[in-house]
Image 1 (cartoon, rainbow, N blue to C red):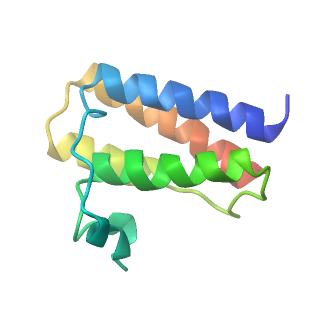
Image 2 (tube, one colour):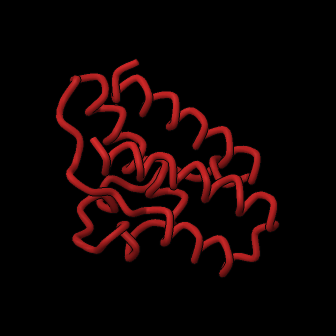
Length: 110
């Protein structure tokens, strides 16, 4: 299985984990929100919005184009901090962070 196929599977698992934690159903950001220069578009989007509409969308575009992946991906620590701050159930935190760690690892190691 290619790294792109592995990443596609990992992104589906990430989506499932976020849905289970009720973090996937978020409002679509306004077009202007995508112009943010801040990490994670933190000034214009919630973290779940950024994950769904920027992070996952960009990785899926790279997969579809069979394009090279970024050199490094370290999203899991930010997600872990966000989930703790939002007091998400510990079991959901574990599953979501674990899904992000898998994506981080696949991108960074390839």
